[in-house]
Amino acid sequence: MQKILITGCSSGIGKASAIKFKQLGWEVIATVRQAQDGVDLEQLGIKVKICDQGQGEDIAKLFADPDLQQLDAAFLNAGYGFISASEDTPRQQLIDLLNVNLVGTWDYFTRCIKLFRAQGYGRIMVTSSIVSFVPAPFRAAYGASKAGLDAMVKTFRVENDNPNIQVSLLNPGPVITNFRQRALQEYKDFTPTSAHLEKDYQEQKQRLENKNRKRFTSTPEQLANIVVKAFNSKKQKTYYLVGLPTYFMWYLQKLVPQSWALAFLKKTYKLEK
View 1 (tube, rainbow, N blue to C red):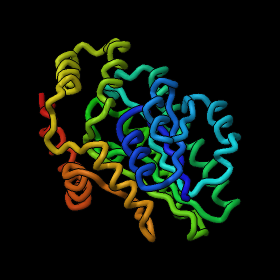
View 2 (tube, rainbow, N blue to C red):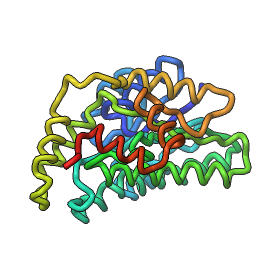
View 3 (cartoon, helix red, strand yellow):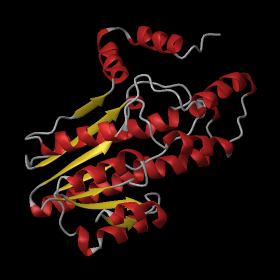
């Protein structure tokens, strides 16, 4: 039986993936931040571990667990975001986000790689985002954290000399998850300081509150199927792009000058003044 570690399983992509892998006969170790978030997963026979990715000691404790002394794969998925203009992002809020999304994931990544080097094999997929390569207004901090993960994975692919250790990125566009609810909660704790952006902030807040936005939006289950396919493939790709907007912007940025691509984004997000 193959064993996989999946982080960020409280909801969304992580939870759907944990359930899918369990259904396929894998031994699944799923991390959540709070015990109550893992009750239904435990009922399915999934091993649930409590781990706050923003706390290095939590991650160290997790990898000392006997259940993690051997792994076939790891899906590093945990993370969150908030809305804030680039010029308006509070220092501490930025540090907290980078600590979870980038530093925490990097910690997981290096520990998995060391384990895989010791055993001679292993696979990793890291959840990134379309915003790692497409600038999304009021998502600069989140985009920066995901761009950092892209750099981490791509650099390791260059450094790696073991074909039995494979790593890849999952870059989805919009997904129906609790991500928006977390971003809204973060926004409630945030006080914008740029008066000239007040209207834009309200529009961004309305976007997050709009539960009926389903155009070009993927479901966690669709993402879980892609993750399973990647781990079962003979050779993992560098990028797994998900959603029409992701593919469109990926190729647009390669085919036209950056100034044109940015002008298109500005028009798309209706930020012309």
